[in-house]
Amino acid sequence: MIDISEITGLILAGGRGSRMGGVDKGLQNFNDVPLALHTQLRLSPQVGELLINANRNLAAYESFGVPVWPDAASLGDFAGPLAGFLTGLERCETAFMMTVPCDTPLFPLDLVARLATALEADDADIAVAAAREEDGQLRAQPVFCLMRSELLESVVKFTHGGGRKIDAWTALHKTVLVPFDLPGDDPKAFFNANTLAELHQLESR
Image (cartoon, rainbow, N blue to C red; front, side):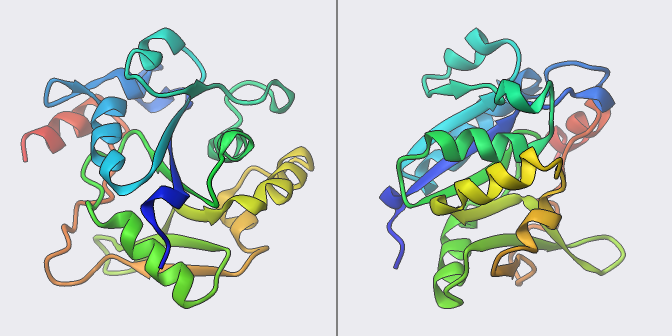
């Protein structure tokens, strides 16, 4: 069984927030708490260590009390979530790393445990959450990703070769998809707020 102490959680807050009008998404309030801090409080009991990947307003993120790292300059500005994966893996000192975006405030409280159980059972390199969407299809949520830290070299090679899509990278490794559609699972658990209206809609739940 993978122990919590072996997992570093990485909060992805490095995007442009373009669909939110360019605001720094992780610093928008959700129930009076900045989204990234809300994510931190939800993820913290599930992992041993925490890091935040952010590319602006670094002092604001540092005030949350965990290490904050921007994307590597070699990948250019706002290179997407895989740039965050790379940044996190470069600093991860545990055997596993769990990535969670800052804009999905209702993600499951047993997210990491279920991914870790599946990764170990399949002897996989990566475990990715999957959720049932409104059309009834089960779809991977690749930013919710538990991976072995030894995959750093693979991410370096993939991103420096111009790769930017998470699913194209995970396809190179043994990956297990973990459905979160059991009775009792919140159907909105993986709903991400791309606009301020969507964020207020989630708050009103």
